[in-house]
Length: 236
Image (cartoon, rainbow, N blue to C red):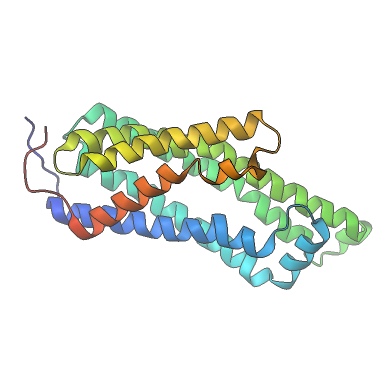
């Protein structure tokens, strides 16, 4: 038996972690789902170029929210470490490492969005390119961004494995949440593997359901930490 203790009261630390997770989820949905759904038509470069040009402020807002998302994600594993380190310190450290390795990858990947802003700009040197060329370049950078997210999804999955294990073994959080987090981590890895190996996988109906365990696990642990907190007992 190990005493559950942090520098903050457990309930307060849990609520902080839950709040950080909530901001991360909401901003992530805005950046990864709303912005692409609103502006990007993957099969039509001309329409995508037109949408981004006409809604440049929304596109720029997406970049700003992207930074907010990953700044909060930088803090999230640190808060979870304080909450879960007494369960198993080695697994807690592994969780933090696998989470934080995503940050530099994310900041490099967002440069593709900045490239799009450059291409839709009014700089004089862009006049040497005709419109179809610019449209193709914009779509190419958007595909690079999407592929960057696919690579990052490896670590979206990997960090959930030790996180889920710690939740399962904690004794002060529901075991079922740990199970869903582990399944969620595996689902991200399966999704990446299938997308990489099978052409057209993203268009298959099954691709929309593969990562459902991850969504259930992450949203559930977020709300549990934010609303319920942790049981006032020793960890096993």
